[in-house]
Structure formats: structure tokens, C-alpha cells
Length: 139
Image (cartoon, rainbow, N blue to C red; front, side, top):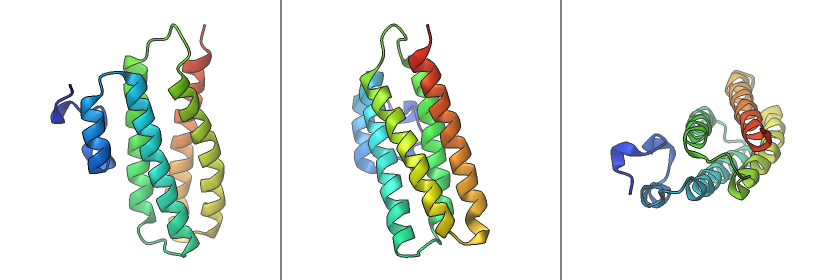
């Protein structure tokens, strides 16, 4: 079991339920599923706020989401056995690919002063996705 201080991602990027689940998971496959679930939660929050034209909390959500993506990639790179393709990792990459497109659509609606937050998230997400593709297709 992972100790609170041993979480592979910063605690603030996960909700209490995700944090409790990840503390119990030693297998990277299980943690990837939790990362995907947390990413979906951020995606829904961003899309929901955009549909209500509530962009005030958006930069902080995008920052936390970026932290989740980069931290999850570090955990994946350090712990995934590269002998076989991970179904959870494939699903995470598909989710990221689709989400990047969705966030680009939301970005268009965002105020000018928040464009940089969106650009930063899109750039980070694309980098993470590319590295995941490299992990999946190496050999």
C-alpha cells in the first residue's frame, strides 16, 4: 500500500475518493484507470463551467489538471512494464486525444485573458499524449 507521502501525484489534484483508491493500488494499471477517471472529472468541470460562461475558476482547474497529467506520466514512465501494451494506457491515450479537441473548442469561448491557461494546458496535454504513444509503440 502507498503511504500518503508516497502518492505518485500531488494530493491536491485528486478528490478524496480518488486519493483513497490510489493509496490502495500498487499496480500501475489500476492507477492509470484512476488518472483517467480524475482527468474525466476535470474535463467535465471545465466543459460544464464553459457552458455556463463561468470562466473564473478555469485557470486553477486547468493548472491542477496539467499537474495531474504530468505527474501521472512520471508514474507511468517509472512503473509500467514495457513488455506488453497496457489496455488502461491505451484508454488513457484515447481519452486525452479526444479531450484535447474538446478543450480546444472550449478555448474559443474563453475570455482573452485566459487564453494562455488554455494554451498551456493544450501544450502539456499534447506532450503527455505523445509520450504515452511512444511508450505504447516502442519496440
